[in-house]
Length: 150
Image (cartoon, rainbow, N blue to C red; front, side):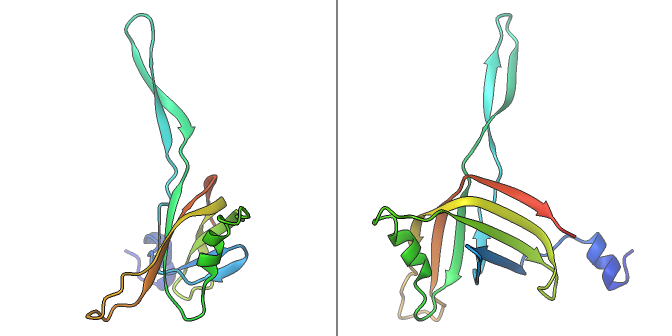
């Protein structure tokens, strides 16, 4: 049984609550990231004598969702999605990294290549609530690669 902090860190899974999102070289404080999936289509093949085979096909396009709180004067996500209407959208490379408890050592990193926004959802406004305002951005990307660093 693991008893020291080093043994626990080496033998237990990494918690998901401590992560860093870097978009275009700038760290942005998101509170939720989902859709970091790598999936492939399945091709079915039947030969001439009645056998039926399945094999992997093309990789599917990742759909990533990022959620963050709304801050006064912060309109970076809106400016990024609004650039589509100007026909000048910039595809960005994004890194999402799980860190240790101190937030200083990267343990696992997802590299998202050539991401661009497909939607930006504004928060639900409710005068009877005391929840924070959270916006949600959906992205599509060319590919995701995973890198274990520790």
